[in-house]
Image (cartoon, rainbow, N blue to C red; front, side):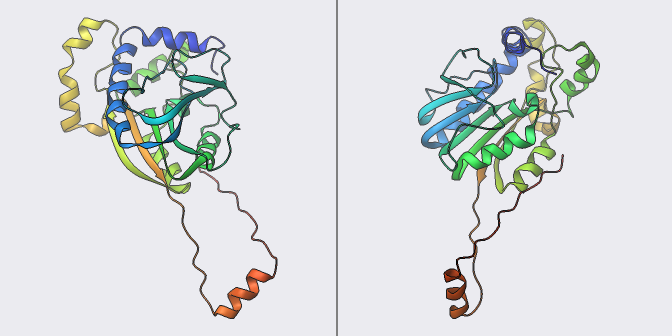
Length: 250
């Protein structure tokens, strides 16, 4: 369970090593990805202390952060909202940024369903998450019981995220792998281990502690097969197709 002072703890953790090193890597990665994305509306869901300034690289007219916390963020416009019931019209958002949102969400399935609902066709979602199959994942097994940040988060695997996206009609376009160093405290020791980033990218990218996934919302079109008179009769019948509910297997 996330503690009431979760956001303060997270911001404090991100101001020191190893959180600071992680935040710098994620900011740099997003700055490289967002110039290729365009649109009117970009929303960031959750993230707490993961407040990214994308104003220099983003081509979106508005950047709004939505979070269940009542605390104002450090950057961007802010709206307090329940992430499992977004106060946003369907098919109205061009891109959604989710920095560790699913890791800390109480119902990540529903949050991702809401993202699919509010995105326009061909809209993009960028998901940043912790990889359980990594040095940080092993650290989490030892630290989880202590309840410290960020070890009590869920650390959802990349395969699971990709499966959920596929079931919701997304196609994965890009995947980036970050942070191969262990989560050690102390800026100097983290700097001495910087060579692990180059080695990890080359030899064991799937064991990175953080992944960044960019996916696009595809909308399939239904092709009616049959005689023309039959198609006309069905259109004039006034019958409607019953909606279906998609289920995600956790």
